[in-house]
Amino acid sequence: MAGRFHPKPTRTTIRGGHIPVPTPQPPTQGQAQPEAQAQPLGHTQAARQPQWQAQTQPHPTDPDLALTLGPLRRGPSDPTFRTTPDGSIWRATRTPDGPGTLRVRTAAGGGIEAEAWGPGAEWLRETLPALLGAEDDPTAFVPRHKLLLATHRRRPGLRLTRTGLVLESLIPSILEQKVTTHEAYGAWRVLVRKYGEPAPGPAPEGMFAMPDARTWTQIPSWEWHRANVDGKRSATIVRAARVAARLEEAARMDGPAARARLELIPGIGPWTSAETVQRSNGAADEVTTGDLHLPGIVGWALAGDRTADDATMLALLEPYAGQRHRAARLILLSGRVPPRRAPRRTPGNITAL
Image 1 (cartoon, rainbow, N blue to C red):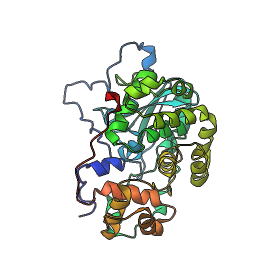
Image 2 (image 1 turned 30 degrees about the vertical axis):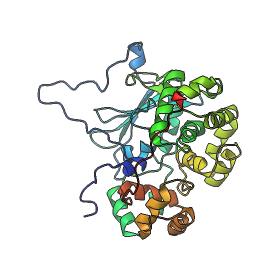
Image 3 (image 1 turned 90 degrees about the vertical axis):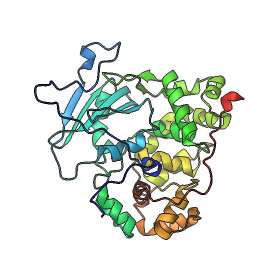
C-alpha cells in the first residue's frame, strides 16, 4: 500500500515536520480569482509590491513545501509562520539585514513561486535555494527497514531545510527545554507578539518577525514570568543573545563544530544544539538525544522496543550514519508510535505563582 495513500496527520507526524497546507481551489466560471490575502492595516499600496519575485521551472523532484518548511513552525499559532487558503506558506524572519517576509507556494504548472518584502528581502532571495533544500541530498539516504522504505516512497518531496539563521532556531528550542510543547509554543507566541516587529509587506494579519538579539537581552524578568518562562530558560536565552554574533557563525560550520560552539553557552546541551543545527545548518546526521519520547518512538518503529534509550536509538540508527536525522524524521512522519501508557503531562503555569 506504500505510495497509494497519505496517512492522516497525527501528533507525531506534525512533530516530524508535517503541516497542513490548503489546496488552492480554482475559481468557478465567471468568478474572479480572489486575492491571496487581504492587505493589513498600516501598509500602503506601494508596500504591497514585492521587492523581488521569482518562479523556478518545474522539476520532477520539486520539494514538498509543507514537509520541508514544516519544522520551522512553532505551533499552530506561530506568529512567524502562516499558511493561507491559496496554498501559500508565509514566513516572517529576522535576517542579518533586518526583518523580512517570504511567501512561497507551488505554482499551478509546477515549480515554486516566491516573493519577499522588507529590508531582508534580498538576503531571503539569496538563501531561498538552501531554505528549500537545494543543499540537501536525499539520494544519500538508503532505506534499510520496510517502514522507512514505505515512508520514504510516500514522501518524495521531503528536503532538509537550511535557514542559515542560528538564533531564530535556538531561542524557541531553549523555550522547549523540559516543558510541554503547549507551554513552549505559548511562550514563543507571547514574546514574539510583544517584542517583535510586524512582518513587512502584505503579510497575513498578526504576523511578526522575532525580536533582535539586543531586545531579547532587555526583556524584564516579570515579562518572562508572564510568558510562563522560568528563570533558567530565560537566563540561557539572554546569555545566548549577548553573544549572538558568534553563535550565528555556527551556521557556516559543519554539524559537530556548530553544536560544539552552541554548547559553550551554559544551559545549552546536546538536545538544544541538535534541534537548532537541524534547522539552521540542514544537518542530515545530527540526531536529537536527550529527548523524552524520541528513543522510544525510534525503538518501537525499528525494533518493537518502546523502552529504548539514547544508546539503543543510536545503535538502531547506525546503519544510516550520515543521514540519521533524516531517518528519524521519516520515522516521525510514518506516525508509528508505541501505545500511550500514561496520561499526558499537565502543562505547568508559573504565571500563577
